Length: 339
Image (cartoon, rainbow, N blue to C red; front, top):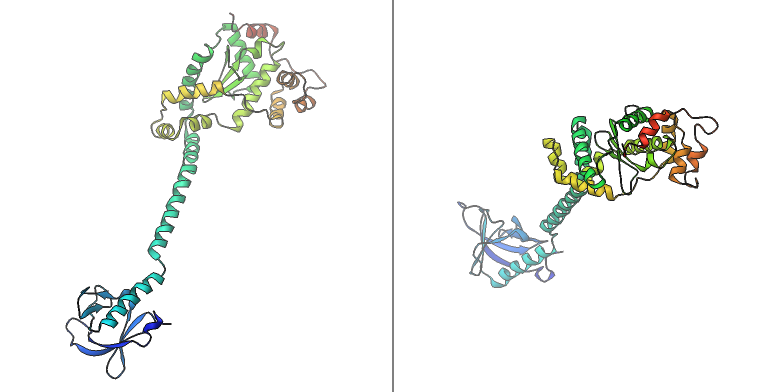
């Protein structure tokens, strides 16, 4: 099929020059399939020009001068108006029929850029947080956790500082957690929380855990729950997710984090609720620490209905559990906020 059926048999004469220094020759010009055919007087084809690529050297002037491409040396002169108009019309028609590769490339490129941007927006912050958490030294974590505890103290009140009670608290922490937490503090009011785990292996406990119960088993149980929460998620991860990409990048590159970011996170923490209880993950911690799980289970739910797994699987269900603190230490711990 030719470019346009109406020009199937259209021919004319022209003057053709193969190169800039070649002799001009009389030729016959006809149309082929999206091409212009140039032949000599013996009907021998001299050249085939792609119609969409043909360049008009002198738009609007007659005779018309054409080249097979803008930078080509080859040239064809045509005087017949009908053929000139036909060439122009066919060139426009063939161009419209050709795939818009430029637009396709633009669409594909735009799609790729949009995909990369979407991946960057969704993936980069998480990757930055993971990388930062993975390489953060313990000393930096401790500094961040200590600063964060200071911001929390302004919201909850200072940590209880009874000397004998602090000693008893450290003994209970060591007994239940060994060295898995560096420091433990009792705070007067953690609002909606019973415990908080801060970077640097710092553990905060609400005062009610020692003031409202008859033995240290409940406080020890909440310590073990805090350990389970920490093993599930590094406490630096939610902190950096809340602080944002800029603060995370600054921490990664300088080892420091904005104090305002820590202040805002302290406010976020105090307004948040206790992480969900995972009984299956918590039970091995009770067994490993040699702590009875039933007192903790009833402290969480006085009916025991929602914590039945901890009650039925208590490692000390049918025997006495080891004593966690002496009576004197327990009395001192209960009075830690009143000494």
